[in-house]
Image (cartoon, rainbow, N blue to C red; front, side, top):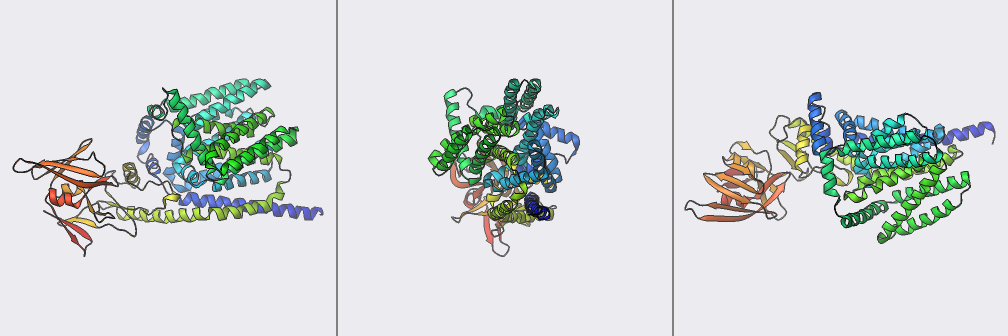
Length: 590
């Protein structure tokens, strides 16, 4: 092949990789722009709405009542204040920045950057759906799980280059979340050990460790963080703590093997790390270790009872590989692996293992695999066709998720229109037809959702919200010429439920609430409503003759409001309830 032909050949393959990255970036932007919000997102989006003083008050309240993650929540407040376009820009920008960091730390070259970016984006799209929904496309979760990974990547690069930026980055990493803050402190401690062996940068690594722990301390100074730690960790019972760690290890293993992508990433890192040590340093035993570990991972992935064994074997092999890589001056890849394992380990005694807590573990391993690949590939331009094939496989795999997110976006547009149309009404309509497989949105019976959603659209937190599905609109409730804000509910067994407070107060009664009991006053009669028994209300009162009366009825909490079956209103409170088919309403009378 002559020079001109070789140049055209290289340009063709490079173009294939660039096209693949452009498609993946556009797909990522599409997901970010149509992503719907959760109750946390609704709340954080309002932090900047009423000036600096109100913002500081909310931050102080959040620090005392929820957790001490000030840094990541500031990022969430800013992104959510400007809405999804800011999320898309930050997400794409950080993916590009971390890919450039990986490629520039390993070896300079735009072609390796292209491959690193492609590997990162493919890995993100192919991660398990629950991890993708909770830790990537939930904006508040993204700030807590993806953003710290980017900071850790920058910290490792700064430590490897002996940059003074490492001090600031160490503190910021420590101040992100409990999980990544502690993992960052472990990372810096490991760097101290290798700095002592090399007699280089010891003071820098010690300083970074102190700053990382200082960042962690800012989180744990929060009373809310301390309460959460006490609530999820049996610190005073060693046996219970060990049992909890065993259970949580099984949960992490189950999350890891529920999808092909995490196990494949672990295998890829083991193989690429062993190959690097073999080709660059002539070490053969890492290849044997990697082969044995990969066989164990493949075998254990097929048997649910062996998932924990496979996870332990894989993690152990990765830990050994990381130590050898750092000893052989491959600190970047080794540091990413160590931080990944540390982020998994610090979650074990917490009883808070959920899919999103595995996102940093997965992403850090993914980035280490990308760095190991970039360090070894000799002619990146030849990767054009494999990368293009990988794009096709990714698009086919992600197609159902695209459809699910697009459907939820359409429902979200309906709710945005409702918020505008109902701005001058006594209630707000809300469609609940979201496909919950593709979102972290809390359109359910949660009081926090009602409160935060109402505030986000500029309404009072106590405004009634009418929840219903597009194909199942519940009937309204009317009294004289007034329509109640809440709706009636039809249960599958034919029972009709009406909202207690709204019905009683509109007919002139009064409802008072205590911790475990309702008190209703109607026509000078006081009714005690005992709700201790699930789905049941027991009403007690004295009739005009002074005799004790009792009535047992069905109750249900519907979107944050107590609903009782119709018999309670007709047989106890003496109200008349008639169905008007022309208006599609229940008419309340006295």
